Length: 363
Ligand SMILES: [Zn+2]
Image (cartoon, rainbow, N blue to C red; front, side, top):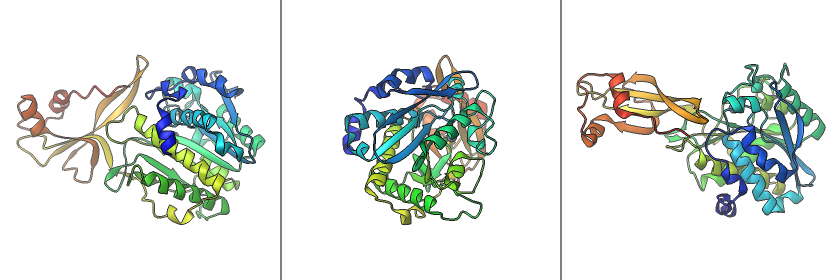
């Protein structure tokens, strides 16, 4: 893992930066991996797949089925280039990779596809061309493992820390039976957790495992293929998610290492804390002279403008908010003293937002 972390900044994929990752930005990498077109999106954009390795263990990976979840696409290309340079694991593996399953959503920076359908709720209906493409690849490739790669919103924490990465071995049925496939996926997550805890202790979470047959992961798991959900998250002011990207890369490499060397640790899975909706982007404490116990919680709406993602502040909640944590905490009295502003006498959300001018997070 240290070798990967050392190499990461010099990999060709490093030019892929920020949150707005579109098909045209990844096109430049596709030729390095002999990618082939496997179908078209609703709007006719090509969807590609590439293969790496010739080994007996087959892993299907897909990213950006939610168009605005780009961290795993960046991290995935890091891993692919790294494996090309350092191919030891590829003796045992064949990777089939769909780096961008929802190019229309990526272009528009939306979760959904151009028909406004959430592809990860379309496993049962299979009504959308993008999901048909994924299932076609699944049926043809017959993977031994599936990696379903996503980003999570900024609201997730584990215990008192921001959740940088979370994982799920999806349920295969409503009873959440621990099937052999599910146990395998749990074993990989247990191993990844052991590795990641050495680098980002306490920042790994586990997702809720309520069964939903509309979700692709639950569907593949129920077909008997060990399937893992990866969620790249927010930590601190890393709004470009370049930090998370590195740890996402480490997690994928750890998962592959686990599979090749049979290092499964299913017993650890249950000990990973479940993610909680405990974070906001900015928490302003002590918001007025009159009420020093009052707080203002702010979340950012991600808006595509001028080819960048702008983080537009919006009020999440007000009150004592002792249950909330944030990626940034501002004590308004200290902030005012430092910047020569008058502390508001009464609670005044608009005045506080104006004073803080939280417009510098865009990527
Ligand atoms: Zn997602």
